[in-house]
Image 1 (tube, rainbow, N blue to C red):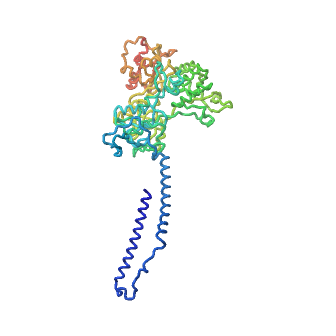
Image 2 (image 1 turned 180 degrees about the horizontal axis):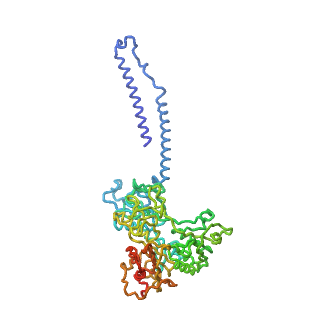
Length: 618
């Protein structure tokens, strides 16, 4: 085609020169018919010899021009080839055809006609549809593939069944639940568990870590073709910027996706200790910052091959992992050491007496618990162990170290996207409807929201991710609801001891506790057996929505019994209940939520404790 265009151009140039030459000849010819007197009588009559003569032969001139054009053609082809290679390498163009779709789209009748070249009796071919791997425009874009995004797209699809939702996650997994990573997965006796990520709940019922099977999700490239909408997940990609004006999300590979509504649900990343960070590359392979599936798989493999593990952190995650590893130690001889700066396990949440009781519980699981321990430095010994030097100059050696000291919200999108962060609590600052800017919502660990009852807060728990994700999804479809539902959180120290909590649960606040003797029904294992659900926030459906009557309590509540079988802890601020811990008391969370919602001043908390029926018989 290029050679044909070049030849056509050459013919036109030759025609132009010939036309100019003919015109000059015509002018000379006209001069023959002009009388001599018109030339002043002194000009000689022009002859053919006076006509201009071309320089060189026509063949030489044509060859020179051909060489010139060939050089231009080669230079153009080279530039074109370099441009195509650059665009292909940077995913700007796609030269390879996409794989055949498992579920090809249903085309409207007449939208694609059969080729006229297909003869009678020949089998017609399906049309080849070339689509980009990520759609250029999607109605709903969810950044982050965790629990909050899962709750959001469920809410979106319930309100808008034909909605098209694109989830962008930086992990190579579909959305999954995190709580079992430090609980039930460690109590499985199936060696395939780290691979299959299937586990048994406390009641023995098996389930998958993933919220939905792979077949639930639509392939991203075919999402725009789905008449009934769908949910697609782009795995292993990270959003680096949101352009709120042009309404588009820019990914780390340069691809841009336009949106109508966007949700930020980036969650959090595990904190590290400064003392461990200072140790540098020498600690690589010896430290696990526990957070997701891959850190679970890594630690599970390590626990099967080393003789000792040190867990730094006494909060929910650290205490759960310590108990789980301690149980493993009973079977394999693994030595587990837990250290933290507080005076007892979960010391920042539980009142002191209950924190100390929990520490004894963890120790009974075979864990060497070291409260009031602050790690000053870390290093590698000559034998390859990790040496942790504490503030009191005590040295602790272990083959591996797990750091479980909390998380910090993933807010890298804030600066390039022009979004506001909360200086006090951290996270993206949003209003009561979880909106950061027009058509931009934030949910889960990364959101710092305005609670209409308890003020501005940021919460880092599974149920909050569910509640806030669901609310954000509803508001993305136009609901306009404020955040008022108090999310809960829970922790299990094995199948026998667990608690649920709601509101502001801070051990620095004044507390009032009421306990009673536990029964066989008052364990995490029993509640999962009764409800069939291991994710405790889902068991609220089995709870009584309205508080039971207070009349007829069989006996007065007992305070601070030694075994702390089951009970309730009230957290007060200005004599108002702002937080509640239910210790081995399950399916009573709606009652606790209503107490906090009412926000009244209560002089006699023992009367409130009766609402939880602590003394009901079996």
